[in-house]
Length: 164
Image 1 (cartoon, rainbow, N blue to C red):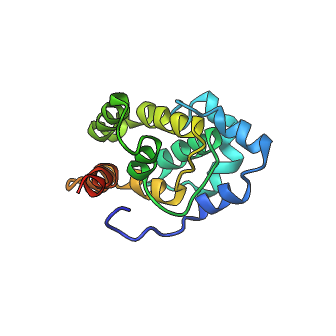
Image 2: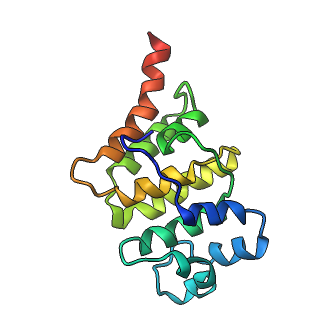
């Protein structure tokens, strides 16, 4: 988990309540890779606009499209924890390499790598803590990089505890 308490976000609660709504998920998936305001995001508007504020617009659109890609949810962990669960013994070098690349991304370049990780989690039926991911995106560019450090601890600490 990250170093701050994750609050339940109304937008994530809305998504989770409507996770079986195929029409909503299809509309939200149209925004994958698009910027807020792009024509591809028009179908998303009824679902995202009630929750958008100036400070969270990009995060809302990002989470909405990623959630639509893989709506499976858990209440625990962060992306580091989820990715590590895919390869607990780190037998595949690509898992560690992709994760390290993700940690080095700036917020403005994060979405394609994050989309790749969510796709991999989906392929292995690994749920995502969407409340935590939303909070982590909001804090990604913090100068102390506490989100990246929390993800790294969740990912690499499991290896240390199993090897001792």
